[in-house]
Image (cartoon, rainbow, N blue to C red):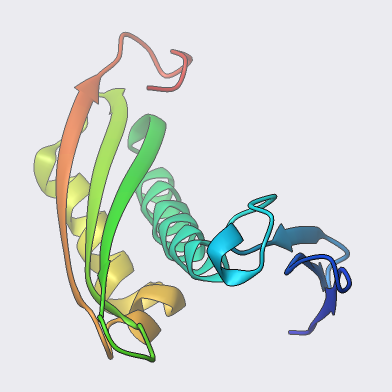
Length: 148
């Protein structure tokens, strides 16, 4: 896996990332840190990555188990250390999973497998942060129902 990060220049702290797969993401800082608040902070991008990684796993695990999942979202709340390096010290993942006749046990198993076995991002972050989660399951009428 590769990426390249380029600074946007002396008028701020904008950085543009180009991934090895050809995608682009921007990062910026707060004005008090020399940034212009034009894009997510690098640490927000780490949190986004962890949320995306585990949501991907949960959906894939449920789909492979032939569960009628039609939506998945995860809201993350993180706390950081007060002193540098300001690592994450606690992250809470709040999952909302929608589908038809989804068993609580199946959804919880998918989340557990993601966090304990498959999600590389949460595995790395768990070295500095306590990670916990909660889940809400929404019933939808059919497998073709819109996302929750």
